[in-house]
Amino acid sequence: MEARTNKLASEKIELDVLTMQDLFGVADANLKLLERELGVSLITRDGQAVAVSESEEALALAVQTLKMLDRMRALGEQIDEFSVSRALASVREGRVEETVTAMKGVVAYTYNGAPVKCRTLGQRKYIKAIEENTVTIAIGPAGTGKTYLAVAEAVRALKDKKVNKIVMCRPAVEAGEKLGFLPGDLQNKVDPYLRPLYDALDEMLGPETVQSYMEKRIIEIAPLAYMRGRTLKSMFLLCDECQNMSIAQHLMILTRLGEGSKMVLTGDVTQIDLPSPQDSGLERCADILEGIDDIEVIRLTGADVVRHKLVGKIITAFENNKAAPGQPAEKKPGQPTQKPAYRNNNRFARKK
Image (cartoon, rainbow, N blue to C red; front, side):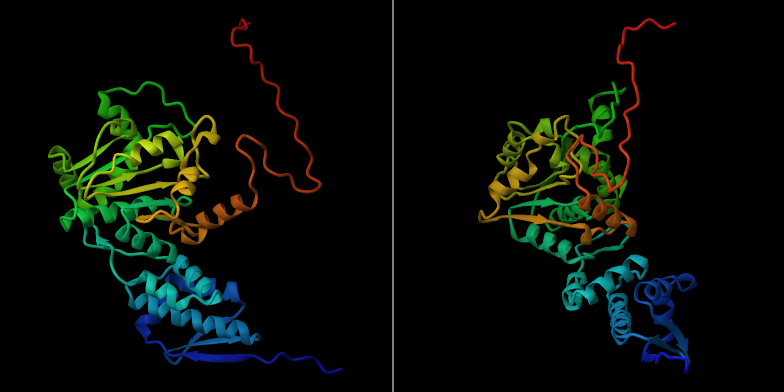
């Protein structure tokens, strides 16, 4: 009996040497990821990249993905494992042109001169919503750039003199931990809750400029409770962590809006830190306001995560195995039920 032989198909991809070095990554890490994902072999020969596979479909995907990565590199995108995964997803879903368009243009520049750019379609829609609407509500998981991009837009609006002041706030709710009484004055006590906002501003403007602007009250960062009774005119207001606000608090902050101002509300409904998650008003607020002129609701997903590639997978895994807050996750078939460990809840029991 004759042994069956599989016919291998191959295709050359025209890339210059410097481009290939950037695309392939350190120790060919990017190349190896693409090989694992598609089951193809990618080699260099005579200054060219050659894709080899038994599958014509996998071969076509590999070639299109490499060409997509080449276009991303030309737009200034750093090519790493995350970029490879994003490029492959765009090719598979037929969204190459849309993804490339999303990465064009610069939102702002950091203190060090690095460009801040959208990296996903969801992020591009988010930036467009902020630019075209007075109120934008962004709901999405961690790592999608909700806060960071909003801060970039706020700084750009301030530099372009579209607003006179930046106001940032968030509810002072502990993330599942009891911090107790913190030392220092009022500002020292609330600073830990507002640290993410400081970090983003420092990257955009530099710590010294941020400190100077805060002293001049051009930038104000405060707990949500300090917003009551105010009217914010010619300001850019960013309210972060809105999933930890009640519907009444949403109404309160939204009615602070004055002439010439913009407002962005951001939150992640999977990270509610309220004692009773049902008290969160973010989703309800979005449902009430969606469809009103000059207000836009943007819903980012795991596909918009731009942190470590595992963050998107973690979010997807949790989304696929949802459990009510405080309830155990769904058990797999055949999984034994674990008995709860005994705890002595008598706080006043005498120690022996």
